[in-house]
Length: 362
Image (tube, rainbow, N blue to C red; front, side, top):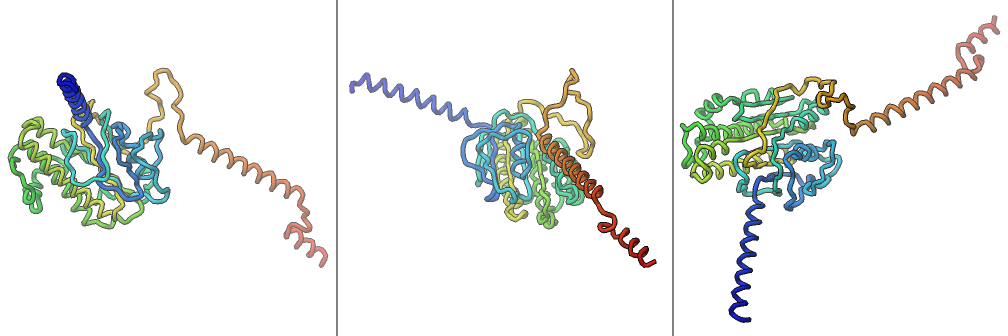
């Protein structure tokens, strides 16, 4: 090979490496990480992307619930019908695209990172297990948003919710400030306190569950949904290349790893713990305050032309139940009427039989 051809080959090889590195760096982004999962909930390892709007359906399927639309995502395989996890814990971390978690079951890229909530899953849990009063906790400390249902009202009634309460909790005994390596983080800066308050909430949730271990032994599944935005505020305040942001990222990775291991152990290795990392949501998260117990509206405000509702996947089940029940009742009426019409009162009825014997004696 001549010197000119060799240089051309080296130049082509350099260009190919450049495009490959650019492609791989572009792939990195928001992600879904499965921290803990029992053996019967099978997550397949691979680079299959999942849309942000499909996260609630994925959580519902892991808990054994049905969804309106099939989840065509190969990352989750169908598990046994009569063996489902006792709890599902979803932690959404805003302001970072990935965390260096020491151990995890599987990781997947997240595409279309739109805001989502687990309201539909919480409503399913409350509807199907209303008598067992499961634990349903949805918490966002930065927005001071808290939703509790079932036994969560009694267990987490002392959980600090507002930023003022959480900041006061940081100065009390058992605070995480005594055990965390703060490094460049400050105890007086507002953005730093917001991040530390979220770490404190994770610690308090674990402590309260350890105090009420009986909740993890009942038959009703529990649901936890936490949203953390302390890293996002630190990145906005100091920049993502700052030492404060880097130290907070390392602290949060270790805290989430321990948080997942503790909850997984409290539920007897029968819990699914997921972490969603989102750099920026594509649309602002707007949420209307409502009670999960309120009745649904009968009208169809989404259709300005007074059209019918969309097809409900439960229609076939309800139709078959009503149809066959009517057929069975109609056949029962026909059989009973036929037997009454052809009944001999003297032999088939004990009333007439006793009357005939009394007349004969007289």
